[in-house]
Length: 154
Image 1: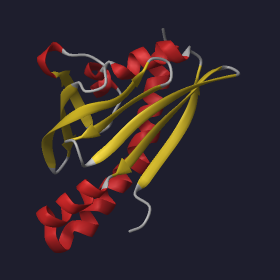
Image 2: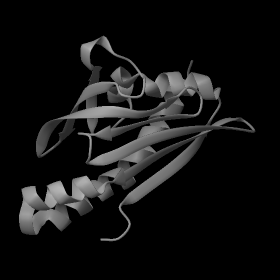
Image 3: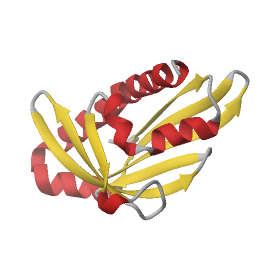
Image 4: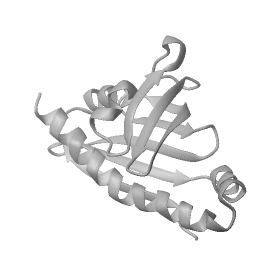
């Protein structure tokens, strides 16, 4: 498995700052994501580099919790976090364009995640990694569409 990244973009009729404020409020992620159903800041924190937040993900076959660290928090430009410190990097960039802001959501499965999956799943690791890639391929466009609906309905 070579390319363990995926990204997609959508233009939303809102300012980069408004969209950053929406996305960086991780407590709202459950409104948009087909997998992540809830997030909460640890210790009353907020969107700043080094802050940690918890998350609950659900699929028909299982539910699991994560802990993520914010690695980019540049209002109106970029918000990104790394799941469990080493597994995957999720990010959002905000670029002004005609008609609003181009929001790009990206996902990258990191070397630490690949190693952890091989340790945890053994011979089934590659299939499990492919499942995560497919979840990103379908989940990112769905999440962006939901963010667009919410942002443009205001």
